[in-house]
Image (cartoon, rainbow, N blue to C red; front, top):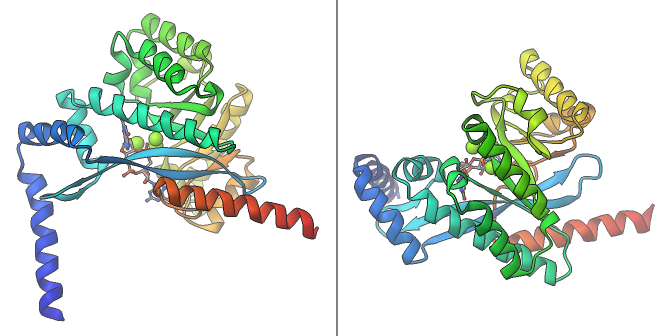
Length: 287
Ligand code: C2E
Ligand code: MG
Ligand code: MG
Ligand code: MG
């Protein structure tokens, strides 16, 4: 047993090493091939209303299983895809897949909001807004259920062009959120200029709740800031009931995190969503 375990640990270690040693060029090539070979999948992490405890939406997160390298985390390959430019076709695939899944859920009568990540380079493409418009039209999806997660790095450059694009997206009816809020370089002034609907409090501010006083202060301030500007606010990376409870107390609107569920396959998400709805019905009936 020990021997076998040792061997698989070694193999695991080897796989990890392989990614580290692979040149960026090779990894870029592997990513573009993975796209062709359809090796990418999306998983969906539930987003939950703090007040009702009900699942109302999903964040689509990319997953990559390579035959030789094994499971590769987006935290590893997305930064490299951003550097090489491979994020543009990958991000395009993510958008189409997420919107197609959202359309499927809408046709089945489920009201599920779908959020997906948009990288800065993808956003900067001249045809980005028209590709969003075209995809919405193609899948005949209600745009108010679609949310684009942007990082602060999107908002710092070329302010006029950025403003035009954000307004055009907003005109399409989709919602816009700022991911990892509070960790980027941007100033707060963009919050008053840009049509942003939601702030996503970065996990790093949530991790040490409720003990860390500075994090309590920061999260409190972000919730107030969001609400004062008529925006919604969601906390990321909620893992414990104590964190959830404090966030509810601070009047944060929503959360996502392992406390509810990690990102799961579409069918598993459906199961979670439906059983959640069932639970709500039961509560109503029994009360
Ligand atoms: P993100 O957009 O901030 O996504 C949240 C990350 O936190 C996800 O990691 C998620 O699995 C993880 N997470 C969620 N809840 C918890 C929790 O309670 N505890 C902990 N420890 N972690 C939690 P993941 O899937 O590994 O993705 C990492 C990052 O990679 C994402 O951060 C995002 O920046 C990027 N990414 C993932 N998918 C895509 C994509 O399709 N396109 C782009 N451009 N970036 C993506
Ligand atoms: Mg995100
Ligand atoms: Mg985030
Ligand atoms: Mg992130």
